[in-house]
Amino acid sequence: MFNSLSDRLTATFKNLRGKGRLTEADVDATVREIRRALLDADVAVPVVREFTGRVRERALGAEVSGALNPSQQIVKIVNEELVEILGGETRRIRLAKSGPTIIMLAGLQGAGKTTLAGKLSKWLKSQGHSPMLVACDLQRPNAVTQLQIVGQRAKVPVFAPHPGATYTELEHPAGDPVEVARAGVEEARQKLHDIVIVDTAGRLGVDADMMEQARQIRRAIVPNEVLFVIDSMIGQDAVNTALAFDEGVNFTGIVLSKLDGDARGGAALSVASVTGKPVMFASTGEGLDDFELFHPDRMASRILDMGDVLTLIEQAEKSWDKDEAARMAKKFADQEDFTLDDFLAQMQQIRNMGSMKKMLMMMPGAQNIRQQLEQFDEREIDRVEAIVRSMTPHERVAPKIINGSRRARIARGSGVHVSEVNGLLERFAQAQKMMKKMAQGGMPGMPGMPGL
Ligand code: GDP
Image 1: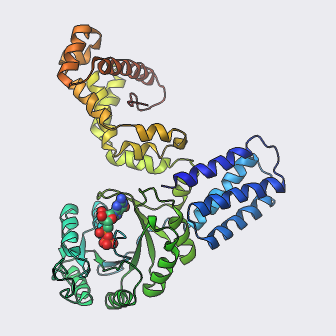
Image 2: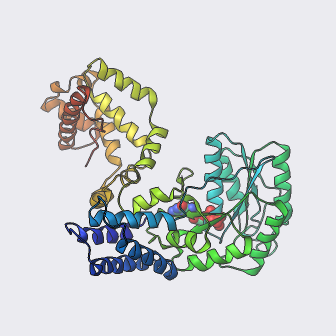
Image 3: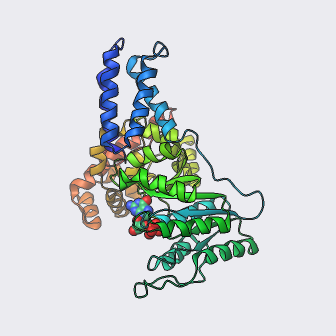
């Protein structure tokens, strides 16, 4: 996401490096480049105009005289303005003071509402809530079944009194969505769920009947939050769609879905700004865990290739196996040898952190090595695993004994070429060296990341 915008902006800033002072002409040239980059990323014209106007004014203003060099000053200003158009502060869900918190989802068909319902409920559950889903999309064929499936996966109950439309009876969808919504909220209240998420029907385009139905549901259930889900890939249509939904259902927050696609990112940068509503969540894939709280400041850092270290750390904390980490720490403390089994365990830890590529892309400066990352093959970890598993326990703790004939045997056993076994042993030797240094108080790191 935002790859090309990010490249363009960083290239623009590079041009300023080494300049001792910025003339008005320098600022204008930079602002022009930023304007082009934003327009090419499909950011809406009025948003671009306002954004570049503010950047220019601030860049020429008094604040450009501090301790930062000119290129750093511009990056700082652009960063702050990006945070601003992405909605400023991170916004959390407003919980109801009594009774269940009601969250209604709205958006075009295919925007990703049903998928989001699953992701959101899974995340809420992990936060200690007891959410329930309500299937009010009785229009899209099989939407109800789809919601039931995501509910099952997220282990969250789904209230679905009507089967909704199927492909054969498109014309006569069963049931009244407004009634279902109302009954769903009542059910949640009685069963003491503290959050209820109401999935509603969308159409392929903005449509008066659909909007009326959404409005009626909103009136019937009086939600605490109305989340407008928008497909980040819809480009320039994003603004009009967002404005129509804002007028129709007066949503309270935005969810950007499909941010994993090669969307140019313009929707993300435009909708919050034109509606004045905050982006609250981002959906970044088809899986239930491909979901993030949206932090405007972190997103701005990612766009400017300053890396999203905070998200990275949070993901690491979430998936890091604490027992394993403690075991390693003890090993260091006792100055025990780092073995091939440890090496494998560490790689598995890395894999647990989810898609390695996604994770590495959040590192500062990752844009420079993006090509390498894109070629990076996560199956590499599988191969390493196969190789280590083909070694005897003794070989794993004393790799020095792995001579030519052992290497050939290991290669055969794991179905790889001998050169791969050699490569792994070399990387392991390096990692072992690094671990020794760490044990003596060096920097913690992740040794042996394959292929990089
Ligand atoms: P709805 O009509 O708004 O309920 O949309 P769905 O939830 O059915 O999503 C439409 C399609 O987009 C489905 O094929 C989803 O798997 C897919 N989808 C939803 N969210 C994402 C996302 O964040 N990334 C990607 N790549 N696909 C998504």
